[in-house]
Image (cartoon, rainbow, N blue to C red):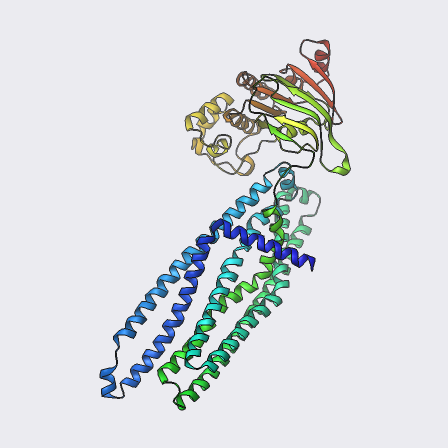
Length: 573
């Protein structure tokens, strides 16, 4: 019961987000959908009345002359044009409003993830987070398009049918309203309940299928080397078969509910036919009005067809609400002990970065990754953090960059740009990969950055220049070219504080020396923090910070014997 109440609360919160994001357009779309359905019902009923009345008028010359064909025929034309225009406008408005809301929700969700430690979560569960951002968000469209709008139009159609038939005979109107409500609502609820398990299973199996496919593509080399490639393929085939079973179950439920709704509609029309026949025989109702009543009932169940399709997706939508509700509505904030501030500038010259008793954890059970870090970096200073692998060098840069939280202590830093160990390039053009650092950069600025990074000659040799398309992960560039492209991106960013994580690692000697020389030339007015275990990088620094097991164990200033001794202990390449 508590879980259901929580799910309803999350659904209410998401509906409020819908209203706040594009509520007026959604209301307009619902109104247009309702008017379109009512116009269609009125068109069918008026056409039946007109045809029957015209046929009866034709039996008598006097009645034919007295019968006014212009008003009802004009009404039919008006309703036909209005229904066509309304249907088009309704489709445009409802879908435009829905897509706008989903885009806003997707942006809100993405911004909620774009916080410290988001990158680690993305690397751990890429398929799951992508599923949340795409399929789960898309599942929410059913809440409006396939549930709310058809529900409103169905109720209005039933009210119109009951009102029209009630004017003709109150008993007939009451019985027909009750019967249509029982049939349409009952079939919809039954379909939703029967389809919920299959819909949930299909959604879960689709997520599992995507995760398994991502694992197959990303890890095919490892799977092949370990002899697990065929096993992974069989696992994907099993998941696909289970999803096919869920699809088959949903198809059967849809077919059955469609058949049941049609039977109920035919029974209702048959009963109304007998009732209006009796009323006509008793001269309590004219034949044209009897035709109008019959055709109104025939059209009254049409909106429930759309609602039935929404009922089949209800399980998927409900699961999306449960998954996304907490993430879309929570206020993103740092942990209790974290203070992450951005200093506006050197100002009093105090610091570009200041850490006081800072500690951070990857997982609480593992103990601190960094312990009691006290660090002060002045403007224009070049500092190198050295130590063995696992000492916490990269973690310190992550903490200063705001990529991870400080669970205890204080971290303050100016805005910075971070050159990580891994060059992150995307399947896009060279131009757009560069503009990640400066979205408004002109082509002249891009060429200048490439010139400064030493990549301009290679790019000019490419047939398409800046429009050259890169493959996934920068496929098409060598390791040295990728690093130079990352350096160009670093130079384009306007920040005066650089974080460099082993900038020449994995490069051959001449390339590494050239990259470092270019970094030095362009970093003269910058504050630089380098994490390294190489002598050629550490010797650029004014101060060395020695780390071990997450602690700062020593600091050495350039020109001191300890500084030279620490440098000598590092490997050159």
